[in-house]
Length: 538
Image 1 (cartoon, helix red, strand yellow):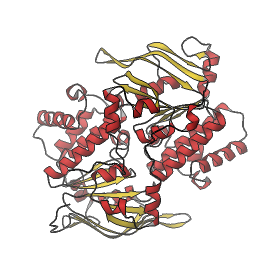
Image 2 (image 1 turned 180 degrees about the vertical axis):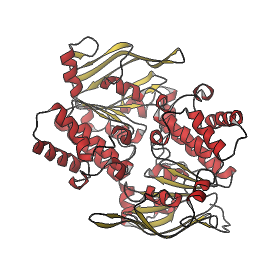
Image 3 (image 1 turned 30 degrees about the vertical axis):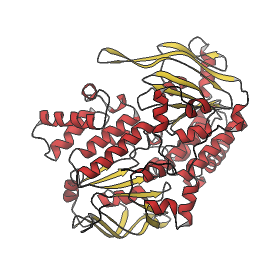
């Protein structure tokens, strides 16, 4: 933060937000007060549902129609709460840009990524014609390091990995050189190396131009590496505001201390139970997955072989686009391999009997990377969790309802959430619902694709403990796909490292992460962000 602070770019004063429900008025934000200066990175930190994203939506004028808002929000001398819809539309994207938490929902699936970025440039008159807009779009895609940017400018969101979609969102946000950037969990779904690069890019951007960044995150490693100050929110109220050095070394609030205590520590050794011998439940042998792109073959997985023991977590790490999610989907039977075989409980997915394959697939649970995309927006939370029980079991309605309530309690939500819908939940709450749904049939194989990436640290610890407890009880195998090597080091017995669809290393966590034998693995380990060991920006 600059030493001289002539005036804040953004001032929030006595901000209150509430909603009228049939049961009465519910306050969501209470008397928020803070300033944001040019060149400054201010972090909003708190658990899911604490009001972080709601604060950002209040600033942008994107609250739902039934919201009641009070107080003042001033941006560059202009009152945002009194601004007309047209004035807000002119500000959004041009002077205030936002990176949303879920890029797949924010990007339009029927337009290419190039068309969507170009449309922003043309709408705000940042390009004279479509040719100039396309040229600038290519520069932006290269800036955020989209692989083969020229070849992927015409790609659609579904053809990119989650991390690549997030980079497209960042490129779109930067298109108009905004004065202020609201970054809502901008690196949540990114692997460690890309996360570090994105944070470095945001730091450089902050220095290069007069930009302020309001960072919304649950990741204390991100906060320690990029933020100047932090505001800790709990249940819509500010419990602490502090410079970063003071926040981590001398937290004042009990709640802040609890958040810091919940941060996972990088384990030098895997858990002792992981050394026990365990029978192999899942075998992957010489797996190949190919796609066609513009008439050419693209190999997403290239001769991948590994084993998943019963009752053990096997970590799968690598950069976005490395093939992690592709391997998970192949295991779940959502995509067909072009070569190789998967054997689960001695049943070959390539050569087994159809009834055996159906039985095995019913016993596979999947937690997707994007929880909102995996939940039906027309289903209540109870309906989403109950669906696999209703389809695959003969349980009565009462038994299904009781199981739904039990699962909601286990993932930390409670039965009072059963009649709500996905759009009424935060990203972290949606992820917990997705985990409850995946556990509904007590799977023998659980494929967890970034299952805790959207969760705050305290809930993350609860979910990891829950998964470990359930695994000890039911002895399911788990493929744990993650970019968080700290979590992998705590949870997993073995870990596989993928790069460009190829297996770089595979072995015990102790050998692979603590004594990497490949330069790529060493780079991943070096890119870890952790608040206790974070390298501060120069």
